[in-house]
Image (cartoon, rainbow, N blue to C red):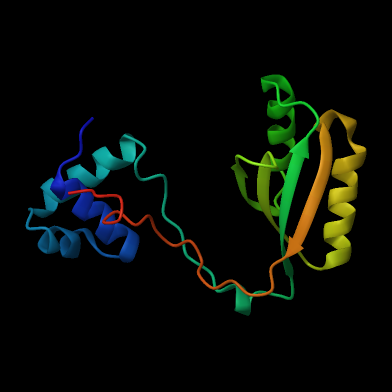
Length: 159
């Protein structure tokens, strides 16, 4: 379904102000509250809005390490990749996972209480032959300069 300027304005505002009331949102985009509520419901049903959540400040969480794991699989066929993904996506320590082009197949962001926990986790992955991992190259995140917080709709040339 094609989205109009009003839909994109709603999405922009909801990304910026996730706790905005329907009344405030409707006023900001010049719609009646019922029409605004219906638009938001349609965006949710279409899957454009996948959920609502709080953004946490990592600096205020208990001590932890964030690691980037670049993973190369031995076999990139669909069944082998699916088995790998099923396992890593079920690991609560994996906070993001991207299929990438280039030297590696996947890039994961992994959060653990400490480096020992991370090493044990990745060693278990390597020992699990059904995961089909050829190698893991790891980098510790020293400081995140910008957290992903929203899609840059204007940069994507939406109306």
